[in-house]
Length: 126
Image (cartoon, helix red, strand yellow):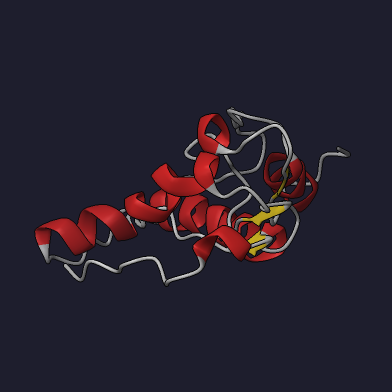
């Protein structure tokens, strides 16, 4: 694992784009006197919220990957219905009849922008 040192003059940083793995930078946020904006590349910000000083605005990437993640979820539901996960785990193909998703109940835990995008792709208005 590479350990990055904050550059000299970090007191002048007004905008940072931290990676969730960059603990050194995250821990230093409260000391960055000129910090005004913290931008994450993730929709969730629970991993950094407590370190962002009140003088700075925390921005997330909500909505940026909604479609891709929602489509992956629908694909995973189809893969499960057709036994793809079991086949991959056991490395054996099965001729078992897939179960239908028509009429199935899907529990979406969390109904943020990604959860709503999943719901729309499953034919429910969000």
